[in-house]
Image 1 (cartoon, rainbow, N blue to C red):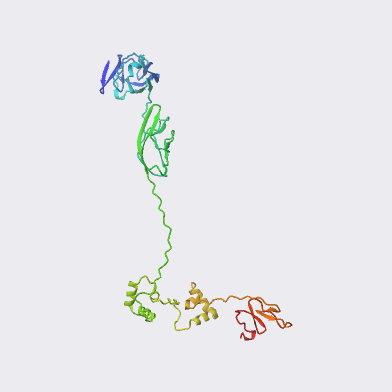
Image 2: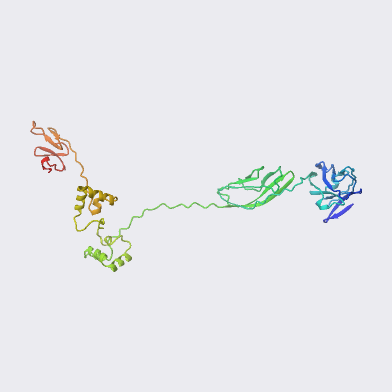
Length: 387
């Protein structure tokens, strides 16, 4: 008997039996699970009651194929239809479903087996659905690594194999774990469309994604710093060189309006002294009385231990000379000479031997009286003149 279901032509295999009220088909299977178009296959299974009953088998194909077969079953809770010729069932490539049910059983709840036919061969499909979890488009910079892991919605599926199609050079995916990895080179900027594919037996699912590789910005090369020699300012244009330059300094220090005018109009000068060509006066420490001789502070520092300790503690960053505006004393370099023939060094003086009337002064010395003295030597006072 042929039946119209869902717009497809199907063939129902019907065998009339005495039907228990609540008997349902529990299991449906085909044998063998893989066969060619020239083979026969059998639909069999079990029901929830051992009594004889009427069963219907509905086979649906992608183009509404019309199989023609029927069979009886034993009354021990098992059934088996007469073997069918595959060539009478499978006409076009695609997926076929076989649903077996009793007339008291809801068709939507009846057990189903699926068969995939391709290239003159048919294979039983697994009883689960293979679906990739959403991956989505990706974005990465040149020379940066992109990594993600593809997976399926049913975590109980054990046999899975991942692969790529139309993928860019250098990209890979682990066939067992689904981990994708790619580090684009600095010449691979742009958009790449590729397929992430997963297979389980003959089941397959895929997702097409776009990977955008951003162009790596060129490094900013800082220019080498150039040393610009400060421009020689010279005397300011407002200065009358026939006047005493100190007069301008005095006005600056005594007239607030003149000071404001100078600071506003001549910021290029570090001070009024520079503008008029005078040397900047040294800054004195706050304790210095300008009416006193600055050397007096130096003398106190050198002679009074208490004064020296007070200054060093309160002014650790400057010397006593800087504090009072004096130049640091310069150490006199020691002069060296060589005593000449007939002389010898006594203290710092090349003295002529008493037994020799004449001698020759050495290099760096000169004869003064009867003594070869070192050129440039500071006079040394005799010991009795030290006090």
